[in-house]
Image (cartoon, rainbow, N blue to C red; front, side, top):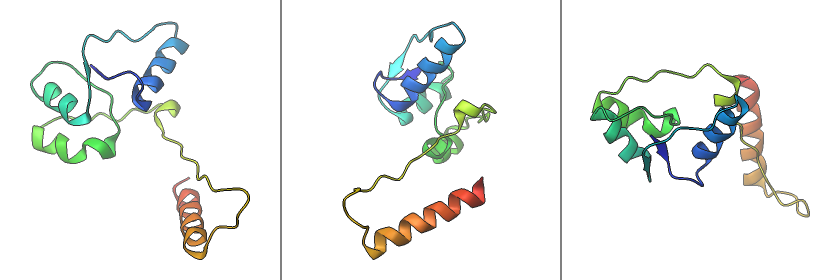
Length: 106
C-alpha cells in the first residue's frame, strides 16, 4: 500500500527500492494518511508513513508502529529565505530557534 504518485513519501520509497535493484511492488494507492491507516487497521496491508502524521490515528485504530532504523528514513529539512533581503526580526528568531533545535537533536 502506498500514497499516490507525486507525494514525497512515494518518491522516497521508489528511490530507495530502486537503489536496491527493485522497484516498489504496490498494489493499492491511496490519497491520504488517514485512508492508508484505516486500510491497515482492517488488515489490508502495511504502509510506510511519517510518524507525526499518523500518531493519533495509530492509537485510535490500534496500529503497531515499527520505527525504521535506516539513514534514508530520517527527514531532512532546509530553511529557505530570499537572498536579496535580510530576514525581519521574527523570521531571524525563528531561523535561530530552528537551527539551535536541530543542533540539539543532532
